[in-house]
Length: 104
Image 1 (cartoon, rainbow, N blue to C red):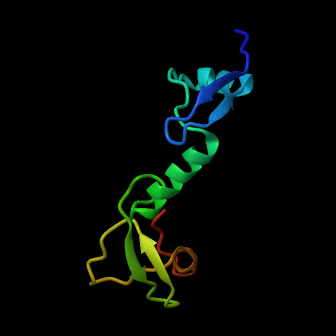
Image 2 (image 1 turned 120 degrees about the vertical axis):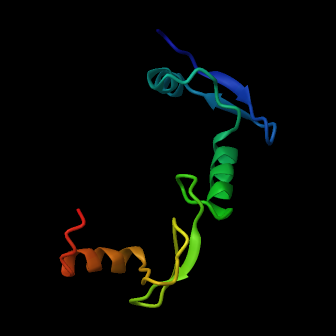
């Protein structure tokens, strides 16, 4: 199928944006049936909002913690119970490799 650039209007800001032929082809390959409703900048802002509302990139609720190893403030995708140490991602990786936990 041959696609042509189309001009759409953003539902959020009302600005016109181009839904390029390449983007249309990509959407078709992925099986998307709806055309985009937001311009690229509003999509990015919306995506940023989702990440700032206490939920991670995959939509899981994130909980603030202090790393038991280095003291860094971080977030984790589970509610810490308090009976076990919680690590930032860097320290967690080091714990898994140096301690030989055999978890994976």
